[in-house]
Amino acid sequence: MSDTVQMRDVIVVGGGCYGTFYAGQLAKAKDKGKARYRSVIVVDREPRCRARVELGEAPDRAFVTREWTDYFAEFLGRAERARPGEPRDFIVPSPLMPHLMFEWVLARARQRWPERPIAVAPVPGDLGTPYDRAAPDRTRYVSFAEWICPTHCVEPATCPAIGRTRTWEMGDAVRALVARLQAQGEPVVGPALFVCRHHVFGVGTFAVDAVLEGDETVQTAGASGEPAAVLVGTISSCHGALNMLELGRWQAVEGGGRRSGDPSFTALDRP
Image (cartoon, rainbow, N blue to C red; front, side):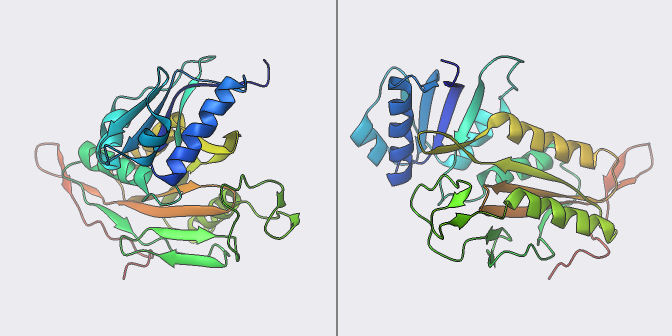
């Protein structure tokens, strides 16, 4: 059983075609002794989502009818890191979901510093990816793929779309971007990355622990009260969603407290 994947709870984002496939694959992996977990929780706003209709509830499978943002606000807000040697909780993202983990980290920062200027800034710089688009909410979607990827690709060393060795890694590109911004004098820290990897039977996940670590990165970055920015990304080897969380300066006020200051930065491009 040494090759059995050990998990605690697995949160599947969405109960549509993708979530149905992922929840089904996790059940198959468990039946074949390739995975152990306490429960799979499928979150979808539709009470009769496809996964519930096709798979149904089981002792180790549950469905939550709720908006994703609301669900993660509660779930992650009370989550704790796994103790050493204990199985961890995991999240299975959907290719069609918004940047939910950044939304949670941003909300946590605003709760932590209610009087401080906190904004979503454009992600500056060039990552060198052929696909690079910014959404209206300033999420930057990037990809190394210049082709249509196979459905449920696990991003192996040999890219199945081109039949050649994969020479790219999104995490390296994002870390290099942060290093370049820092070299230019930008107050950017991180990146806080939630990296989706193939886990078992075609299912990609990232650990809840990684999201909690990202929240701690933001807390550390803002502890001094000086302006700072944290690059936050949910990525795989080939694709990514990136956001820049911008923390404005706290200014000392009479009585020893602090008040919000000017959130602007000297060089980060803000249209």
